[in-house]
Length: 153
Image (tube, rainbow, N blue to C red; front, side, top):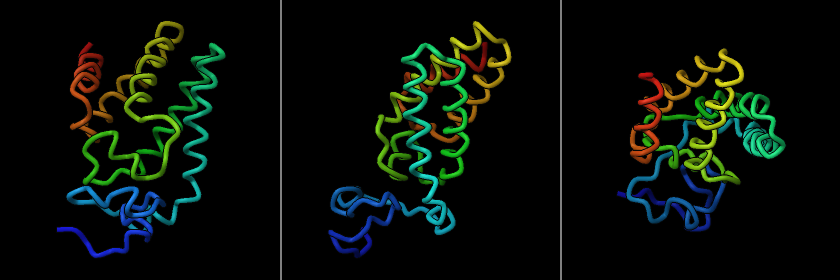
């Protein structure tokens, strides 16, 4: 059952987009709790961290890219609610410039590169993979299986 909301009103999921462009056609849109909506000032920073990581990867600076994305991940986790079952559900937080399913693969690869150069990143890689699988178990099967394999190694 859908909630009554105007098509041109802000979406109840908290994305900031119009309802008709966001959750109108979804069976059960979810709303972010009020305390998370109050943190919306962080959302632009969140996008900037995502973008910065990609810029640093292009420059060949995997360590700094991983650090930017680790910060991105720590903040993204604070927006997680139980209704989010896959990483793509997190796009309802805000409009990200990069698909989050691509980012999680890229971040995993970046962390693996960092492990080769600095063993301290091994724990960060396993923590990320473990947390990701717990928070977003319905993400693309290949992503989840790769992460579980990394954790078990």
